Image (cartoon, rainbow, N blue to C red; front, side, top):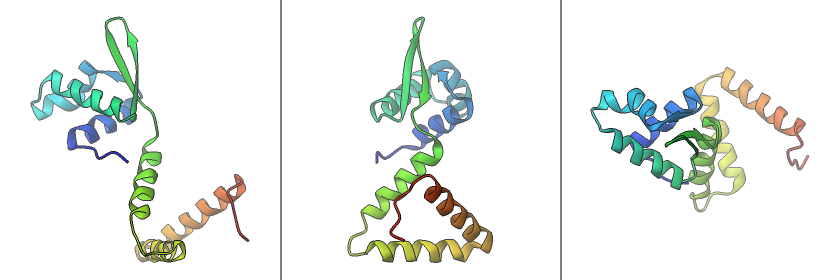
Length: 129
């Protein structure tokens, strides 16, 4: 999972909100308030493109950029990458720690987790029941 800088995160957040934008539009939304140049925003978009987090299509003389995955997908990929990097923990240990963490927040979070599990199973997710 590629590491993102603060500007790349902000640019990606903007693209998730609007769906697609060119460098100028992204600069107005993200770069102007930060007092950074259009070229800096363009470089951030290019880095995101090389990391395959945004796609682009040429319209006239400019590229229009769009996210290649939903925000939730990127978050899930980050969690999986982080969990995959934990050595010495069994799958059961990781799941137990995750459930404990979710359970500490509130019962509603556990209900949401239960619903997500049920949805996954209904979609044909693998189960060892």
